[in-house]
Image (cartoon, rainbow, N blue to C red; front, side, top):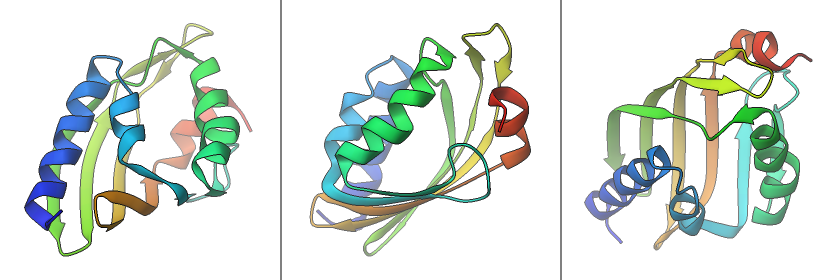
Length: 132
């Protein structure tokens, strides 16, 4: 997959995520992915492998949300093995609050799979929405 194809794949995956179909984005992620979330929130850290991402990050996050994450993609940039996505979220928490964050994801690809990603977000919004 070249940079343009990766850019299209990410755009398509986020479009599917908007419809609650997170499996499309998960399908792009390598089983040995390394996913880093910046900061010192309850979701910050390095998650190694798709199983750990699902069990320690996405599963617990999903349990705290009403429905799924609603992300609007503002920009997608691609160069070589990297795709960068800027986006913003507007979601509800299971407790009736809001989780409206701003994101920048830097994806590193190998072939047709994402092997590493770093997620930059407003850590204060995470803490205000979900606690420590």
